[in-house]
Length: 329
Image 1: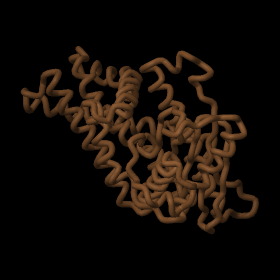
Image 2: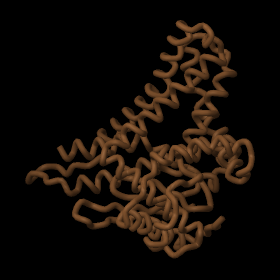
Image 3: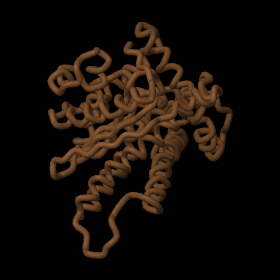
Image 4: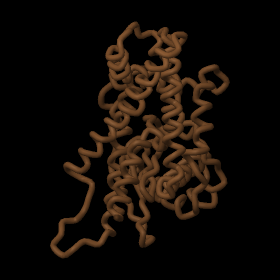
């Protein structure tokens, strides 16, 4: 039963990965909530700290390559958004897997039995299932519902009307999912670690000592959160789809898959611009994401903030060893 509980938390967190991580490749620090812990990354390193059921905190850190430094084309506008998100998702999955395996280590096993871990076919199955769930929930299902509504109400059968309904259904499903899973105690703890990550990042950016009491003074809502990015993606997609001339269901569905890199890249550029121009019209697009963080981030305990600080310290130690430099804005 405990294995199923850990699998459930791992799979659900995998669906929430774009929400609980910061996908921006930057000179600042970012992070992500994991199972009973936090992953933090600097430009050239990442560290993770997880608290086991016994109370022991285990840590790990590794160097991190900035892909845009190795391949200049990955730093081009639009392209950098999709590539950055892809790299962040890969790192986020590795961090989640580390935290899940840390939890599995404490499960009792019979003599001679193989140690349980998320790797090999089990890890691949979770990734396939996760991608399939995303496509079904946020691409296929909203389009099916919007198409049926357009048949009943012809006023929504046009390109603008259908895509507006499709977008609103997609957002409603997304909101329902993140709120629904927050009712589970295990996932709510992930949201608390998400809040711990944000508080720690705020404290670092403010130049405060990396201490629990200092981090707890800050709010849990951070403008660079993945929640803001994902909400921007959903809003931008509604506009982009309205320019797609496809008139059949299959054509529209294919467009939703093919245009995902473009929409991701556009959303990334808008978030970057809005962060530098808080008074601009584009900044309004990031506001729903900040409101939504009232669900996806929760006030953390001191022990949870301690994990976040530990993860950041490990990342920063390795960053310094690699000669990296951080610019605090």
